Structure formats: structure tokens, C-alpha cells
Image (spheres, rainbow, N blue to C red):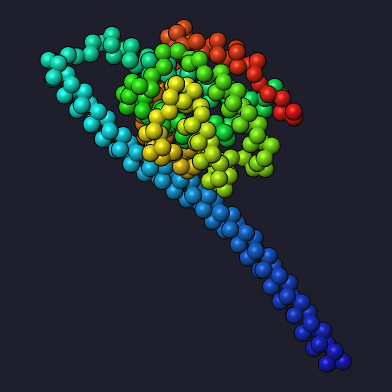
Length: 279
């Protein structure tokens, strides 16, 4: 009887210890899961910070190169003025130039908007628009804001509607052949050069009437830069100063742009060329 009593007491203690151990394990697992969640959120924050830092770094480097090109261009302009005996731009000339820059950016924005809104079913392509901006920002937008007057457009060019139609065909083709969004890292790596080739060899020559060989030497914005542009609008003035200034000028001169650019007419005509997604 004494042995049975001791055995029951031992088993009871063992059960109590096992119960305490399981409770302790569950508590540890709960705490561990919470710590894992905290670490995951910290990793996500770190990635976003690194993304923003890398975008800012590339922007500063590109800005420095742009400042150098602008300074070189300004020196050449001053040299020409000295040869001709001098001359200065009036306030009216500066305003006209500012409106012309804003108008050109607005025209490109309208073309991109209409390409993105490609389908009669209401489908949109913000991924294609972002990839396109990664090419147009350095190739066209920054050139305009640096003062290159060769890129200025007085009004919507004749080829704009064809560019929109062809761009919509591109979007439809990509939707039919790509399982993932172009924002996916692998898809961006594969498709950005193809989209760039279309803009440089087809769309931009239709807009400007000829192809510029200098476009081949301009590096498109990287994916992380464009994601930072999309996701951190408050940082645009710092990370993308020239593009930000350009967008602000579009808002500043929106009335003049609407009256003189023929963008409203383009938008109306573009409604007629939207595609059927399933045909």
C-alpha cells in the first residue's frame, strides 16, 4: 500500500510538472511569435528606409550630373550672347518659357494617362505607366526642366493619338502574356528594356518627328526609385527635385495649359480608341 501511495504521489507531481512545463512552453511560443512579428515589421521598415535611401542617392547623383550638363549649356549660351554683344531674357520671356515647359509635361502626362486607361471595360495599367515614367522622367521630363528647349511642345503633336493607340495595344499584349504585374521585380527587370525600346524607337520619334541618338545614353530610373516616387509623395521634392518642380508648374499653369495645349481634344479623341480586353 505504501508503494502504491508513493507511486500515485510521484505521478501526481510529474503531472503537475508537465502541466507547468507545457504552460511555460505555450507562454514562450506566444512571446516568440510576438517577437517574430516585431522583427518582421522592423525588417519591413528597414527595407523601406533602404529603398528610400537608395532612391535618394541615385537622385542626388543624377541631379549632380544634370546640374553639370545645365552649367555647361549655360556657359555655351553666355558665350554666344557675348559674341553677339549681350542680351537678357525679359520677365515675359521667362513666364512664356515656364508655361511652355509645364504645357509639355502636361501633354506627356495626358498621353500616359490615356494609355493607362486602355480598355472599354475600365481596365487600367498603373504598372505600365510607372515603367514608362522610369524612362520618360530622365529622357524627357528632366531635359525639359534643365532648360533644353528642343523638347518643348506648343500643343499636342499630331502623332499623340497614334502613340496612345499603340501604347494601349502594348498594354493589352502585356496583359495577355504576363501573369504578374510589371511592378514585380523580375518582370520589371525583363520588361523595362522592352518598354524603353518602344518609347525610344517608336513613341518618342512619333511625338518629336525624329529619333535622338542621345536617348540611348540616358539611364532609366531604377525600380526602387520609381516605387519611392509612387509610395513617398512627401519626399518627391527632396528625392526628385526637377520632376517635382515640373509637376508643380503643371498645377500652377493649369488654366493656360487647358486653353492652349489641345489636351481636352486629345482626351475626347482617345476615348474612341479604347480596346476591348477579350478580343
